[in-house]
Image 1 (cartoon, rainbow, N blue to C red):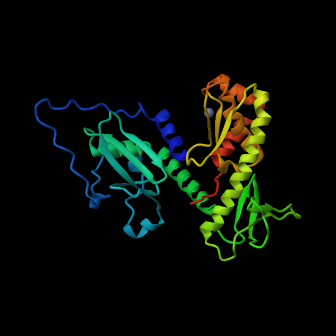
Image 2 (image 1 turned 180 degrees about the vertical axis):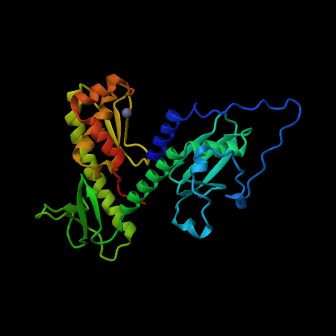
Image 3 (image 1 turned 120 degrees about the horizontal axis):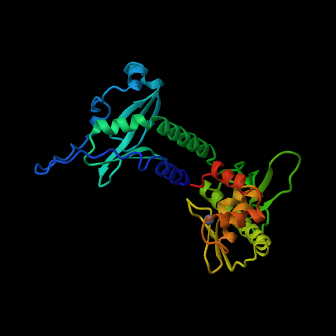
Length: 323
Ligand SMILES: [Zn+2]
């Protein structure tokens, strides 16, 4: 989701106004016919020919069907139209609506194109070709990110591994051990191998039980650590925080309210301490400056000098999927 938001912002920074083809003066009397609905069969072949640009003339001839499997494939699940951009086939979701410009959005599902009702399909295609580099770059980035996230999907069983404070931890099911109320114990590191988290869960437990036990343990660690780091940074920033809540939000790492309440996503516990510290300091800094102005970032920098690198790390690193 963060990715989606990012791309939306990229889009509006780069394209928003640039992409406003002038509307042809609409006929005054004749009621404009509605654009035909595009049935699913309208994928690909319905694309009307557009005037040849230099790019088109340089482009390789139409690819025979048998070769299309070698093309990179980006298919939006709600795709109704399709275009070949360079060596990629892009099936995209297309919607018309009350808007003044053609808009592109690359999200987790693929490319969505929005167009005003009066824009001809060939102009939509021309706009897509003009932005082909941007679209393909974003589609590729999104696909790679998705692959990274998928690779971090945890298979919840004895021996499952996940990052804890930036280091790998391996789960060992250990129902006989008395864990009191803690539900798990993290063994001290032995040599170079990952540390072992022993969970009080039966060997034949369902994956969801193992996941829940691991999550409960992680949330406990997160709360303990976050409080410690809040208490570390608050006096350095000259603020006092009142209340910590752990969040589970899919799209945000933290938030702060003027009354001193701090919300932090428990999944931050997957990251190394420097990244956690950056988020903690970021939210505490909001108790002084409630926006993202220059003064805000100076405040963050005063306690986390390399916040820029850590902020990027938070964006780039894929955290495990819990669903
Ligand atoms: Zn902020």
